[in-house]
Image (cartoon, rainbow, N blue to C red; front, side, top):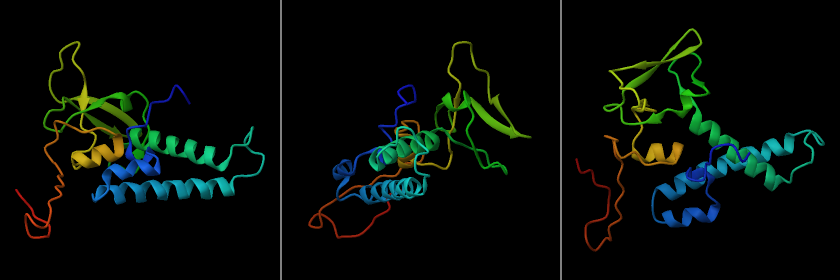
Length: 175
């Protein structure tokens, strides 16, 4: 497991008390609920696992922790194809870095079970090949799925907490 990528920055990997920093935010409950759903799935799987199938047998807590890490690795490495395959894991391609669709210099194409990396424009030797992980994702979607904030994102979600004595309560859209 030590050789696998870290998932510490992915919010669903945070311990339950890690969501305290998001208290009062709509994000805290969203991430906590997602993490609890995954933990619940892990506990159900642990309960259904045949006795003695794992050697040495892990505790439920160890199993849940390993499941959460594996689930986060798969979720953060999976590629949405837009084809009947839906989602795939594609070694090496999953190592390409993300940038906003406006700035990416390559794209992925899926055809007959094959994945192709296709340059959208000339890429000079030594330059990084950049793809857009999800053109529909906003700033917070990328953080939730992959554990990073995209400084190139053109779609941003901003949540601002303001006391009621400053402005009337309610949600506001500021274009």
